[in-house]
Amino acid sequence: MNRDQVRGRLRQWVGAIEQGWGRLIADETLRMRGERDSWMGRMQHDHRPERDTTVATEARDGRR
Image (cartoon, rainbow, N blue to C red; front, side):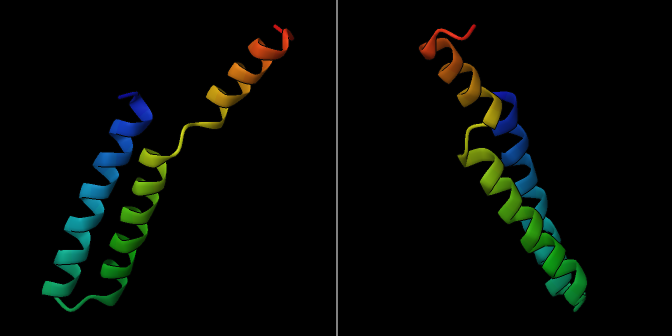
């Protein structure tokens, strides 16, 4: 697990906390921000950073 994946998991967790707190205090803005953070954390965790694929492509094509 790399650093981006760890940060993504943390962001998902924080987003879930914000969503729950927003529901508890009936704050729609906080709940929506939590949904956004959770979604962005999922994207960060699930997808490889662009720089990893670029380096791998350059190495494969002999451009390094």
